[in-house]
Image 1 (spheres, helix red, strand yellow):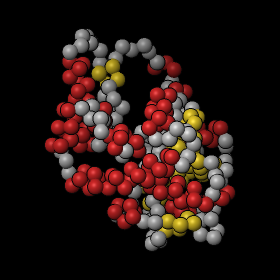
Image 2 (tube, helix red, strand yellow; image 1 turned 180 degrees about the horizontal axis):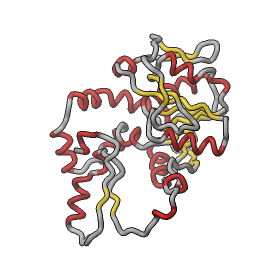
Image 3 (cartoon, one colour; image 1 turned 45 degrees about the horizontal axis):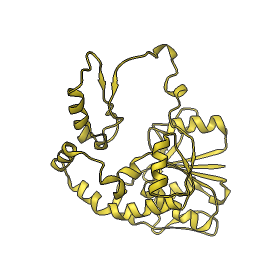
Amino acid sequence: MILHIVKDDKFIGTITSIFEAAAPNQNVYVAWRESVSIIPSLFQTYKIDKKNHLTSSFPKSSKSTQHSKHSNPETAVEVSEYGTNEFFKAIGDISKFKLIIFHSLVYNHAKLLHLIKSKFNIPIVWSPFGYEIYNMLPEFRSDLYQEKTKTLLKKHKTKENRLFNILTPRKAKAIRTAIQKISCCSISIDTEFQTYKEIINPRLKQYWFTYYPLDILIQDKSIVENAPNILLGNSAFPSNNHLEAFDLLKKQSIGARKIITPLSYGDPKYAE
């Protein structure tokens, strides 16, 4: 059996489609959402009991467990709050899994990886989302934003941002050491993989994987055309440096070409 641990996210539908096609009925998908009370979950500790089940330092129940809105109808994935009894029950006996895939290595996943690695020799795969690196590790964040974007971020800094910055060193350390403990990275972008390998863990091996194969993205082949338009960024995250990109495009002769800027996920305030 393969264990997939993932935050309730848009990728759940394609994860289940891809892995059920490759290994039907051999996957367990455990999806979670952030607890309403974020601070206690950051400092919550976990252990593995005699039955190889995860337990919490202060057990609690999820207020509700429901199907992820991102699930496919044929493979419904239940979502519970991270670190609750329901979350651990969905994982069950860790020793039964032949492989564990962490879809992104956010802080919550890094904590679990450290614990599992301390007791089991189960192969673990890290499938990067990107933000766990570029938003968290200072060696990547330092040159992430250009000047106009920096100014915009300072202008809209909130208490939440300040709290995030205080907690970042703790999270960054856990994420970095988690990546250093593994050797398998499933990713499609070669240059990005090489960067992770050079800066974080020279032992990393690349296993090619993408969350959105073209046959899933474009099921109706009649809509495919050779359009000359410009795709700017992929999200409403400031790491796209939209303002600088717009300035650059203003100086170009783009004619009637459209500039398409996806803002469907990320920071809604930044999107505005």
